[in-house]
Length: 92
Image (tube, rainbow, N blue to C red; front, side):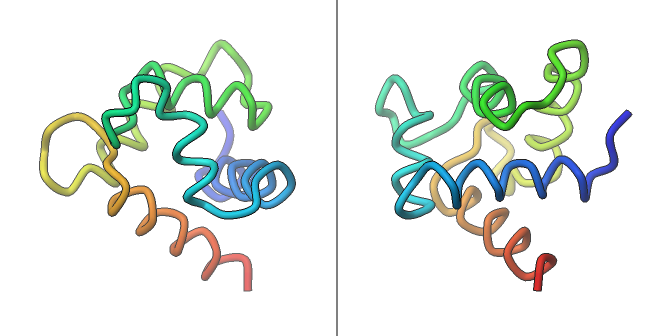
């Protein structure tokens, strides 16, 4: 399985190469516009980040577990921004 660092690096590359801002990326993957990313929406983000289909479901569950601070099983903008900031800090 890919390391957390590898997965986060692929997500960072996707966001920085294809979107002007992290907010643009969040809005793009928030298909229903509820300002929260569901597991299915995170799976689509992982697909775009070139994460292997076999492990996308497991990785999306782990990302929710790691970054969902309010326990609603969704990633809201603040949680997404926190995760993105962590990714950005690790790449420096």
